[in-house]
Amino acid sequence: MKLNINTDAIVIHTNKLEKLSRSALPNAVRGTLNSLAFDVKSNTMPRSATRFNKRKKNFFKSQSTVKMAKGFNVSSMESTVGFMSKSKKSGGAVDDLEAQEHGGIIRNREYIPVKTARTGKSNKRMVQKRNRLGNIRNLVHANKMGSKNQGSNFAMAVRRAGKGGFVQSKLKGKDVTMVWRVDSTIRKKNGNFKITPVYIVNKSKTVKA
Image 1 (cartoon, rainbow, N blue to C red):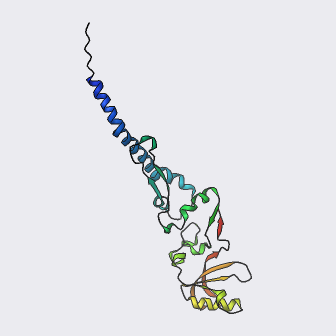
Image 2 (spheres, one colour; image 1 turned 45 degrees about the vertical axis):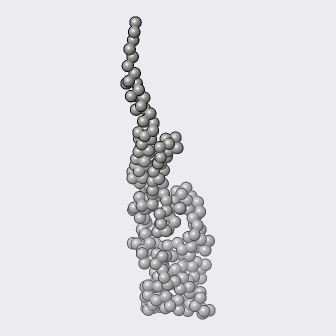
Image 3 (tube, rainbow, N blue to C red; image 1 turned 30 degrees about the vertical axis):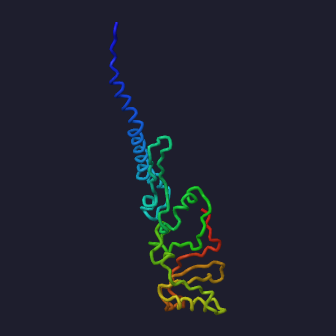
């Protein structure tokens, strides 16, 4: 008995499998990993972020990033998604997210904004643009005015800072230092200046979250 076995189909199928391992399979794996990472960034992460008090609505979207999988080596291929501070505008908030979620120490926080510095005087809102540290060009320290009287020092500092300027001074009779925005250099009927508290000065420069 003579059997004729046509192996052409097997050869063709083997060639396809070889090509698959070299190109199609890595492409499929890479594409799946990257699609999943972007889906986490666009959907899963925003949903899980509802526990945070977001003063800036697009913060999570703007500060998160995807590192895409690359190459053709399936065993070492990976894509990652997470937060990365892209600029100084975030104010270090990205680096502090873990401490805010799990507890920890946040450093370099000398000036802590009070609610009157924020939009709508609400702790849930952003600091008003005119009160942001980066926009403070004229901060006068009352204790450097030269007078032995605290009240005189403060009055001189207010006038030197001028309307729209800022004065840093201790609260009378307390070991607390504040920063005020000068709204007017003219005294009111009660003898006080029209000023708005914007920051409390944190001597330790650290905050326990």
